[in-house]
Each structure stands twice: as structure tokens, then as C-alpha cells.
Image 1 (cartoon, rainbow, N blue to C red):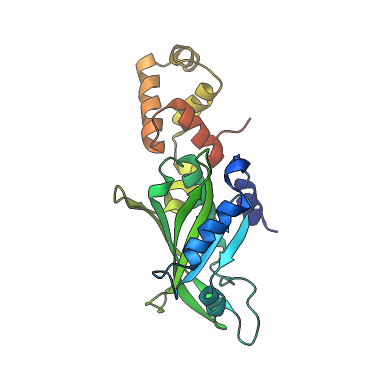
Image 2 (tube, rainbow, N blue to C red):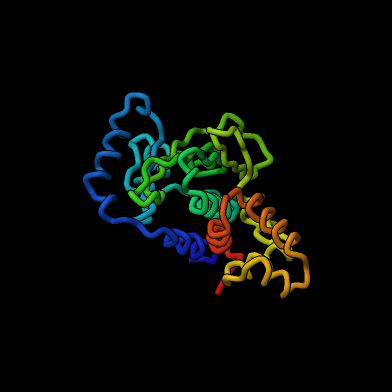
Length: 246
């Protein structure tokens, strides 16, 4: 397992689930609704269980689409040249959704990459939405719908976006979230670390030899950049992105 895979697996441990709300019966109900949907018949579908850290459902068409020629289906095989970018995208997307899970239900991840389709690498389009949460609001199940991309011409790059279908905002999670060194300025990060250590604006002002107004301006900029309302939420977000460690 390489570094990216380890980071991805570790990230899946971030949420602390209410196990009473993610029982097998509830899981079966969700899968039955998906598999019996007339609207989704003939679609390449899969359901990922964040709690169990595995796919718990893959439609027959999904298996047929992604199986190797003359072999039984085992898993989706991503093109080696797209593998790293796709993992970075997955990590960045989870970091964003886990840190902003109150708004996760409004977000859809859309990504294009190459995968082995009936024995030949082709570009596919995947849309991922949240299917179910636990009682604590943790993301439990995600639904993936995959189609063959209409454009198969080069250049072959991984294209990934998050779309908020409530606000209409569309952005790249890799550009905005994975490059963590570009998210906060050095001063903003310094102040956020002091906030996380329990220091008040006056204490931070005295320590850094800047005015309280300047400290509070940095506070507001941090909240705006993270799209959160409180310092507690900002600290949690920063921890999840790896900006703050203890």
C-alpha cells in the first residue's frame, strides 16, 4: 500500500459513527431501493460504505462494464497514469465533505478518468452523491453512477469537480483543498494554532505584537476561507486538512 492509499484509509477513520443507526437492515433497505429503482435500471451503480470501508453493492451492469475480457469482474481498474491524481481527488473530496458534513447532502463529486472498460481503457464520467448519514450526521453511504465519457480524445487528464446543487458553486477539490500550503497564509495559520491552544484575541495580540483588530481580521478571514461560522469549526477543518497537529 503506497502513501496515498494509506492517507486515504486513515482519512476513512476520521468519522466516529453511531453504530446503532447503521445496522444491516438499514443498509439492506438502501440497497434494495437503489437496485429496484426503475429510473436507475441499466446504470453502472455502486454503493460505498464509509463505515465498513468497502463497496457493499455493485450493479450487474457495473460489473459487466468493468470486467476484463474473458475474466470475471473483480474491481474497477484505473489507468496507471490516472491513479495518483484520482487518489488525490478522493482524499481532497473526503476532507472537504467530512469537514463540512452539514452541507454534504448538497454536494456532488463529478470526475473524469480512464478505467478498463471491457478490456480496453476508456475515459469515464463518475458522479458521486451522499446516499445516507448516521444519526450523528456522519457520511455513511455514497452512491456512484458511472457512464462512458462522450469525449475519448486526448489530452488524457483527470478532471474533477465538486458541485453544490443548492448554491450552484462548482470548484476543484484538488486545487482548493489538497494543496494545503496554499489555503492559509503563514500568519493566519500561526493565529489559528494559537486559537486551537485556547488563547484569546488579546493574548494572541500580545504574543505576536499586533493589534487586537488585526487578530480579529485574521480570524474572520480564516472563517471565510473555510466557509465556517465558528473558530471551533475552523480548528476541526484545519485538523482534518493536516494544517494543525499536536
